[in-house]
Length: 110
Image (cartoon, rainbow, N blue to C red; front, side, top):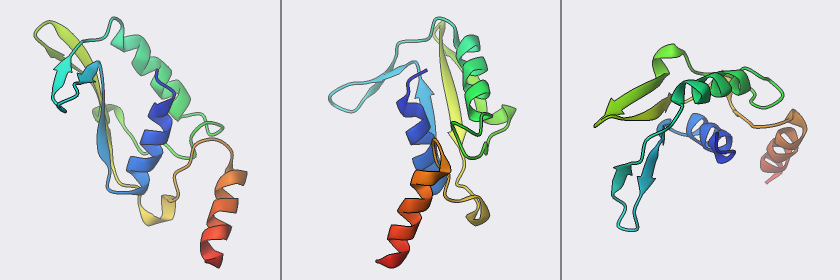
């Protein structure tokens, strides 16, 4: 599981939402090609274990329908659909709350 997935999850949740695709590669011309995943089931297990850990991510906005394996041309990719967080759930953050609280305090003073 790429570590940057959690910052992307947070950014999507705090803005308009988005989709993360694992097993897809972006070319220099911005086209996408499927490279596939060897064990997407293990990635899903790791993903759920981490997103449900409040020490890593402040809130899980997802359900089983939002995390799924897609097969195309005998290659499997993992699609994670992240909705926009409700106002009461924001900010969605990664890690402990201390750094987020400081960031919010600084933002309010400006």
